[in-house]
Amino acid sequence: MSVRGRNALGVALSVGFLLWTFRDVRIADVLAQLARANPWLLLAAAVAGTLIFPLRARRWRTILDPVAGPLPFPVLWRATAIGMMGNNLLPARAGELARAYALSRETDRVNFPTAFASLAVDRVFDAFVVLLLMLAAMSTPSFPHQARIAGISPGSYVVSGTVVAAAVLVTLYLIVFFPDRVITVYEWLARRIAPGLEARGRDALHSFAGGLGVLRHPERFAAVFLWTLAHWLLNAFAFWLGFVAVGIPAPYSAALFLQGLIAIGVALPSAPGFFGVFEKVGQVGLRVYGVDAVSATSWAVSFHILTFIPITVIGIYYFSRLGLRVSELRAVRESGQ
Image 1 (tube, one colour):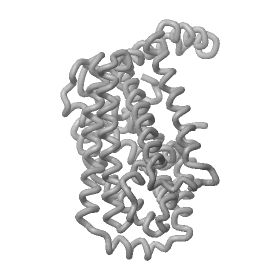
Image 2 (image 1 turned 45 degrees about the horizontal axis):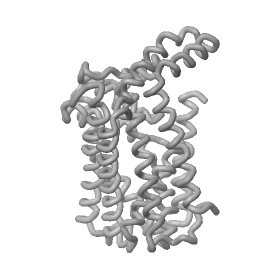
Image 3 (image 1 turned 60 degrees about the vertical axis):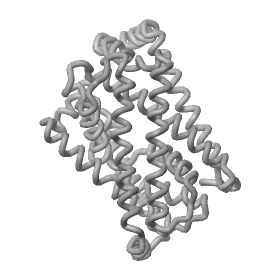
Image 4 (image 1 turned 90 degrees about the vertical axis):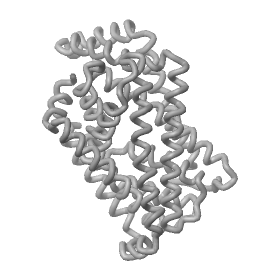
């Protein structure tokens, strides 16, 4: 499917999920519940939900340490904000591309392929920790073990996600520890399928392997894991503050479960910002804990919007300040650099 086709599918699915979310929920009821919400707790939830991004930037420095040394935090923070803004506003989930490109533009210590490869490590750690916390939430006494989502037990979703994350991690380790063999296989395939891409792909794989260097060092691996754990515990805390703000009596473990479910849900194609998917999955996940549709929708809509705005505005500011252009990102994506 072409990029334009995927974008159209994502928008269509987002619209469909939004319509599904509000099929049995009146907007007037949601607005009435939000009018009764605690504004200070909503603000606190937005602040906590925004503070996860500096943690992500700090974790990125540890991931890049083996190939670039300790990079200045402000450089990493600006690139991270730009990337999150890109995910919120640009089609085809161009945020990761924007994040890696912004970093490579600001420092000559990391080229684009290496920066982009490091984000694969970033996302794999996210997947493992989110699923681990989701599993922990499902092990608590407060979890309704008889629950089903689309007729399937939540544990089945966790197992499926874990298998995918494990497969990705194994692939990354193969690239790290056996780069020559991986490159040899690539060259063999490229000569038969697309000879013109052989040299460029070989160079990209070498840089990609460099960006995965953190996987070689147990102490750095542990550090990245701890930063990731802090990130997602704080994100769940932001979720929980939002619960309390709109009057949802769900435990903190419900936030751990829900963020895992949303992480699985946003893997589906969607419009920029994951609107529609976030709201519907939030509604479905909170239903597991017996939360009514109006309360769940009130939380999902308010939390999503309040955490969408700050990082998007910050990212736009840095994007403009660095003199970047969306056309540059398109050129990078099309060239495969």
